[in-house]
Structures are given as structure tokens and as C-alpha cells.
Length: 128
Image 1 (spheres, helix red, strand yellow):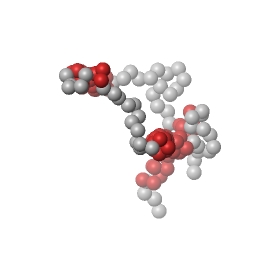
Image 2 (cartoon, rainbow, N blue to C red; image 1 turned 90 degrees about the vertical axis):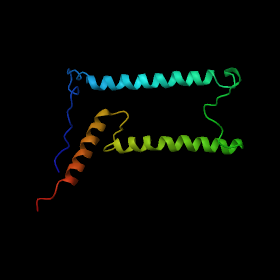
Image 3 (spheres, rainbow, N blue to C red; image 1 turned 135 degrees about the vertical axis):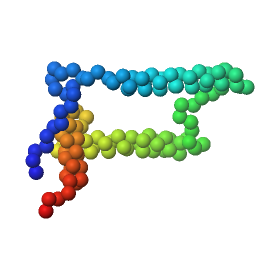
Image 4 (cartoon, rainbow, N blue to C red; image 1 turned 120 degrees about the vertical axis):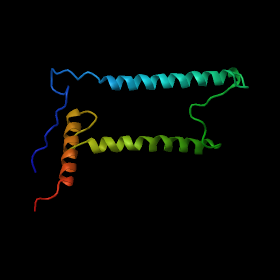
């Protein structure tokens, strides 16, 4: 099997500038920002006109999951752990040949190229 070739993309060469963003991308981002802003305004109006005054309301960033403190802590830690498990798995899969995907950006490029090569090999019919 040939050596893994690192893919080159725009802006990856030293001294090269990244391509300017596409106008359609910026239009979509502004449309999304306007939509979020409109919903935020409607939410503020809804809160100000609600029957309970704002000063009397209580908000919990992470509400309790159990009335028992020991079970609540267990559920909170499990929730955080299960939420971070896909991140840990992605970092593990991006690590190639014992190199860290976090501290060695080159290993991410090599891993991505190897993954692309394996996918291409799997999709290419055998010539036999």
C-alpha cells in the first residue's frame, strides 16, 4: 500500500491566503442572525407580559434530576460523561500511529487522508 498523501487545500500552504468567504455563506449567516434576533425579541416581550413578574421568577442552569442529592450528582456526572464520550471517541479515532490529535495537527491530516484512502479503496471495484 502506498504512503499516505496529505491532502492540500486552499490556505494550507505556508504563505497562502485562505479564500474569501462566499457571498451566499454570508447571506445565510445574516439571515440566521436576523431570525435568532426576532425570536429573542418575541421571547423578551412574552416574558415581560407574563402573569408572573420577572423579579419573582427562578431559573436553574442545570435543574435537579433527583430529589436525593447523591442520585442527583450521579445523574449529573453521567449526563456530562455521556455527552463528552463522542468527543473522546473522535479524538481517539483521529489519533494515528500513537500521535495525539490534540497536540499534533499533522496527525489529523494523516488520519483524514488515510480514512479517505480506505473509503476510496472500499468503493472501488476490484479489477480481478
